[in-house]
Length: 349
Image 1 (tube, rainbow, N blue to C red):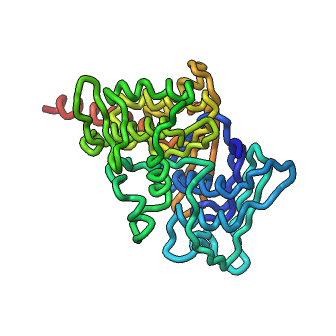
Image 2 (image 1 turned 30 degrees about the horizontal axis):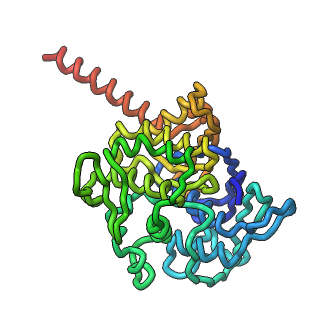
Image 3 (image 1 turned 120 degrees about the horizontal axis):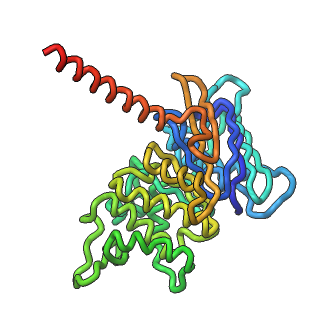
């Protein structure tokens, strides 16, 4: 499939008209709530499934049936995908134009468009949702296929990916990237039947995954996804809020892990609110810390119900408007004002 180079969207969810260019390494999407971070990840995840497999130097159509099925799966509208159009006026359409290493690909969705068939299992990208999945894994795939559950397609896809057994021969570069995670877990991740365990050193009985802290369950899932080949050098990885439920001490390990994946050739997209994670990645880019990989920061902003706007840069300092840094500056200002007020109150007593 190849890496994603750029995306143009028109008239879809919070996006009126958006143009974004990506790097081959780690793409970091930041922004306040309701600015479209998760929507962008899901659009990219759906689009990548619809890109034709063959390389083509000319512009080609995205597989419309696949695109509609995937958009429906990851966004879960109550009825049709065209409910997600930003403007539903007569003649309005949603436009998707993506550039990848396979060439230029486009699609245009007009009202009405009523295909709601299920999307096939993912094969070109892997989406890690913000909530960990090891606790819900037992029986989830069967339940999702037979019943209406309140989860979108990304949870089904990652559970299907987790179901694969470990590879006999693993990529050395990727295997080495999880050594720190196994040290944090104090053992190896094991799938027995329909349940995950961590076999810790010196213990005869493995620890059931649902007894681990939630942040450690997220790490255990990553370890298994690499061990079973679901994350390999051909994968495009999408990870929504990697920092969710992680202790701040683990953030530097996650930042290094993402860069090691990029070093191995994996294109990574993350959406995050986290100051530490973005700071670690920006510092690595600014000071060219090993491993040296391309990193791009994409800032999403929005005023009220206005369309989303985007800015990008190679470090956080390159962004004219950084919502994470702005809020920390505002917090520091409030702290300063509180200290000044406390001194004034003390002086009047």
